[in-house]
Image (cartoon, rainbow, N blue to C red; front, side, top):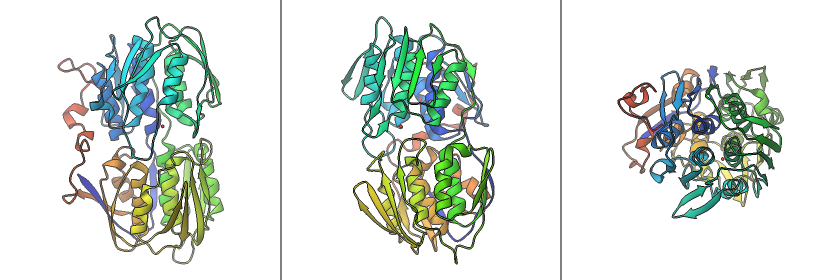
Length: 460
């Protein structure tokens, strides 16, 4: 198991290109199960969640490979298997996205309830509700979701809103299932996130008939067959936002390229409210340098809500930034109300944070100092790296396999921006079950779809 060693005090400078979206590519990979023709993704991020999804697909009989440049080729020729077992699905929640495609293609599916980051209860009840609305019989049995539609799925009308708002993965799952259903499906309360729109764009390239993407009402007219395609996923807005905050928290000049500023307008508004200088263009955002010794951000409140409001996946990073602000900031988490495991670790570094229910009160500016801290989930890991880059002394962040789930070689990219960060072997922390197996061997990663020696079971 690895850890990061971070020495603070260096403003970042330079440019960094954003990778393809991790949250967009996972359901797009699942969509490959809807056709027997190849699906090609030229810009998939090289992160462990993608490798885990490829393993889920491999277990279902798909053949897949991710090349060194990130390009993925996956083909689900023949009839896929119908069971995605716990051994593969336990790594991440995104693997539940195979439920809809399997049900649509084979008329039956058995998917283990998924794992992922420990950020609170994330039920699949809306996924099940959607499949039932399409005429499937669905049961929970021994930790598995078992679904079947012997005569095929039929178009239906449903509302997919929940207590925390629309379901992103649930919308994606139902949308994929409905593409091969007989008749028309209408999803009310659909998620409007860019990742859902991106999946819809891919499905349309495959021959699906979908209207209303990006709105709370999506209409899908079923077709008899889908074909393969090549689809580049959108830039990762959470990665882009993390690098923007990295530039801001260090007072550096960081130009984040190949991103979509229109996907991050709420972050940029909060940056302006905090008095943090930046500029942006069609596909870039740049922070402007300032002297952190004499200038502090203004305290700025955020509340996480569904898109286009402030994303829950940037909450921890924003909290790290607000520890450096002059005054009191209020962070309110409405999506995953237990997503505050980074609070205790930031406090170990000297942050003054008090939690009250779904709110966290951040008093700044804090005199952060390096400490031994533990990463608890993907975005908390990023927040600890950000805090470490402005803390006095050395910060050691343990269990960084969490950050590898969603950021492609983040320490190398931060090094190129001038950060003093390195990845070292962590002999002090025992491996957590399954952590080491997130990484494929180089030989396995370079297989091609034409390699007949061994089938590659490619894996909110």
